[in-house]
Image (cartoon, rainbow, N blue to C red; front, side, top):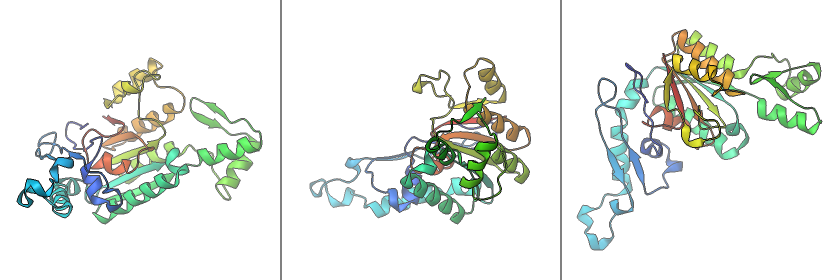
Length: 274
């Protein structure tokens, strides 16, 4: 998933992500394929499976220790770090990633790691799941129009309570998109509860891996993008039209999804370009 002059990195299981975060170095099978030059960085491939760590009978001289393997992967990650070092990445944090403690820890770990290697992550958090939970407890039916919450006076009281104090009835996706544009961000990433944009809403295998603004508008016109996905794609389009290089809608239900998105090839969701 790469724009004509941009490079982004996305495999289903990013070995770079696994190597950079010790807490997820628990899988014997890693797969990593970076981008090549004009559209991608030079092709470097490292693959490992249980066979990569042979038994003593296979000969110790052929075996690589996990530490050696990790060092090789870290070395391979250098082009990715160089590509994004000093760049601003705006992340909208919401959905399942806010409700599951393991996913919360995953997001925080990814943000810290990205900051440590020189990126400039900016976090925008939503409050939808918590607001809906309180509305349900109080038997108040949440109302939405084209994916945006309809906030009456009664609902606003709950919103203010959940967000602790004065609140503004602005969709968090919209805020993230406008902030990305104002900061001149390289990338906008929306963490959500779905795999990304689906060509057919009931078919999880119809994920649109990459599209442009024209393609998104076509999907909306064909009613293939509806409900809560509408404000998400609209904020992505608006951010790109204001200078953000790319915007991605990714699956926040997957641990370390931010590292998969930024430092791998095939990714977890949909990337939108100009």
